[in-house]
Length: 123
Image 1 (cartoon, rainbow, N blue to C red):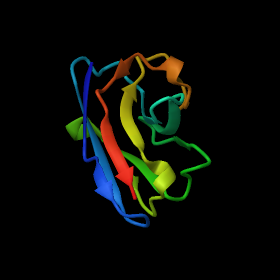
Image 2: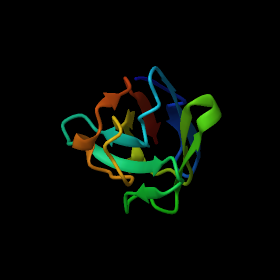
Image 3: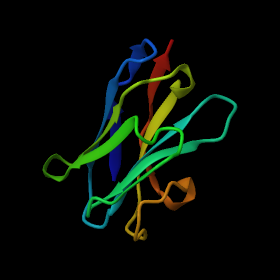
Image 4: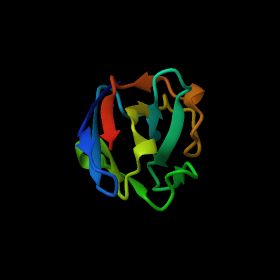
């Protein structure tokens, strides 16, 4: 499974960005896809996850501001980020599970497949 993120960039506080993650390869077993973020020198943080049935899970810090969605026909997962804050600045990574997960967890150790990341900077 290969994951490629896009959509990062610079935005002012209060603005919006939409991240995309295009997945390719053997996707038949993938159930949950998620977004994580990491600031240099800090641990990676789970942001949002979504399974194929539409169940979602959000970090408290982004609930109500971020929305994860999935276009199965295009094998793409999105992260709509609204009301952005400077503390949302980070490298954002897309992740997919190898088919073990039964629900959308934000535990990074449950995910085997990762993209290269896209930088989001909020000033």
